Image 1 (tube, rainbow, N blue to C red):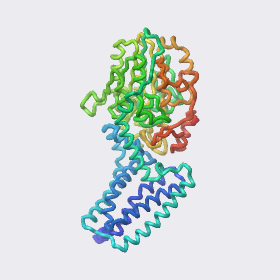
Image 2: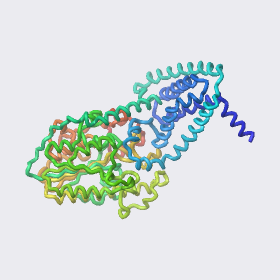
Image 3: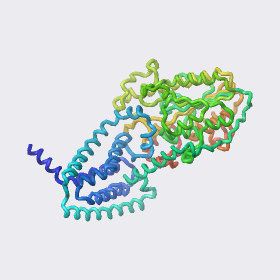
Image 4: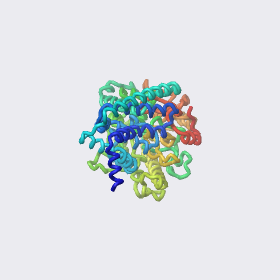
Length: 568
């Protein structure tokens, strides 16, 4: 009992609370020193400068609890930052993390919560008791002595000078050092501002893109029936496709399909769906991403060229470019939205039914875009129970101890995608038409693959597993006979370095014989003029950065080398 009274007395001491609040405020900065790849002076500055500012602000009132509550937005950001570090192991809160709060549907968010329980417990224990003590201090009007405030203010000013010196040292010793990227919480505040800016730009997209045109036309005979299908997969990484050397047979059907070409060294330029898919469906890339607010998608290009278009998605609305692009089509359906039941989870088989109905309309020129559910976590929900080939595939909780089960379920989802694409090819082959299909995935996935124990995707810093994606092309027999040169060029380019974010759009234009000023012959993989480019990634600030300048770790570069993928 006496010990309890002593502890209670210690926490009620206003000077003790002052220092405790200060330490709690700076915890995220200290943790970031261990998680981020920064030079020594950058780490020193990342602690000293924010600490000195917090220190000085804490002296602005004799009631420390009041100031602590005034600083609540930074406490919230600190809690968010610690949870993010627990989930991804590194990086500050990115713009995309804020945007994901808007574009991720509730069911996906709930799937992730179970994996965050330990981190949530940590931040609750760290912040809630301190906030309660601060509120008690406010209610009881407890105050520091004037002498204490004056003394701490002098110390804070000295600390601020030292912090500014450390900032100067960080700039002088590292040419890449940026306040907007490297100094917490200034970088997070900058990212919040960017998130609001991008949200506003997205909301005005219909106005800013209204007058856009591809000036597209077809070069193919008007009396010849053509069907082209563009398939955007979800969360499928090339590493787990047996077409690319995976030891498990995850592609038993596609491996038997004639006219299929699998491109090996393909990387995406984004690990987030809301960026990757719009790049796949438009002419924008990592270098030109901000122009997306003024452009339309490949669906409009085919419409301008006289094609009947359709967009079928097994994803929910995300109130962003995927929705906008899909709604450009003559016919569109986001099948998860067809039921008022939020738990409604149709299989990708439903997309094939829509394709069959669409091609049955018999339009002479047809272009169809599919956005599948693919291999999205929870993987067990991506395929029917009867298609569970690798066992056990349950439980698949997001924990390292269940990795074998997770991989089994994930591989089953790849086999299901294999079956889905093979049946789609069969459906197209049955039509009396020149037909072609192009497939890639928006990004890959981490599944506790190495000592970092990373899981899922959309981390602020990508891993190898999140950016190496499958890229497939199929041509029907009649199409091959009409365009044998395209298949020959594809085989020549099969093992070249390809960016799916760049080449998917341009290759589809060439397959469909679409001419437009936005087409670039050096970027489609079925042209002898295809030119390999240096690898880049679209960072959080929508800047194209080389892979060795985005924070990827040694393990990632080792895997890229192992797969024969060059950075240049």
